[in-house]
Amino acid sequence: MWKPDRLLKTILILTMLTMVVIWLPFIRGLMDGETYEWGASFWGLQFGGRGISGDYWLLILQAIFGISLLYFGWRGARQPFHWLLLIWTVPSFIDATYNALRFPENYRFRGDTLGVDVSLAWVGPLFYGGLAALAVIWVIRDLRQRPAREAPAWNRANTILLAIAIGLLPVQFALLRFGEPHGTTDQIGVLLTIAQWVILNMAFTPRERKAAASVRTA
Image 1 (cartoon, rainbow, N blue to C red):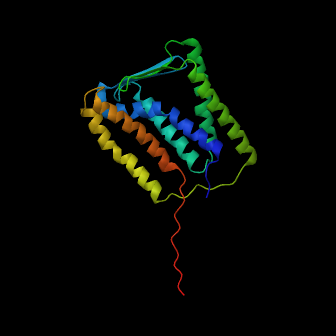
Image 2 (cartoon, rainbow, N blue to C red; image 1 turned 90 degrees about the vertical axis):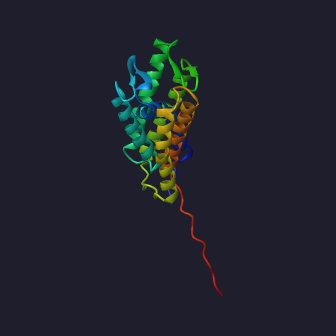
Image 3 (cartoon, one colour; image 1 turned 120 degrees about the vertical axis):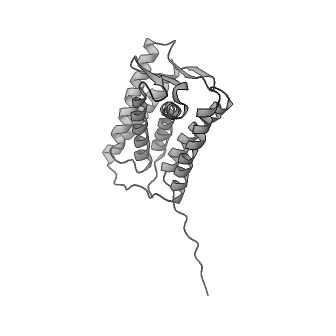
């Protein structure tokens, strides 16, 4: 059965981490409603909104793109995965470098609910630059080798993990919609949302079927 090699697995895990900043506002905008305000920037352009208003349509497109990229990556890394990966990693590196040079003081990752406020002026370009370099190396190598591979089988473990990720939605809704803003319920909801994103990716990963035990008779 096909499994991602170490390089591809590293790329997929790092890419998954970069997309947490999409999944969080995507879910929270839907669950929290107008009490949740989010914002993002790309090449100096500002995007944001409250709940599902404003530029929430952009989060929908990004979430669809992110799920598609990681699904194709874990499920055989066949086309169009190569181009989806480059479309995400290379512009992200360019954007991180632009923000670090143009807005070094304001280029930060903020999460009011968990009290997170981290400068990305140095970390951003280094992290995204390294990820983009790994992605380019893997894509060039894979296109040269042109390996023939099939998507791994979807089995019971994949289905259970996907069901868990979906099953968290009503719990998230209750915590985020009816809890105190930035309070304990919000914090639990945010942590569940991050865990949900990880579980969703785990649902995509190839998993071997357990062979049935054989019985021999004399």
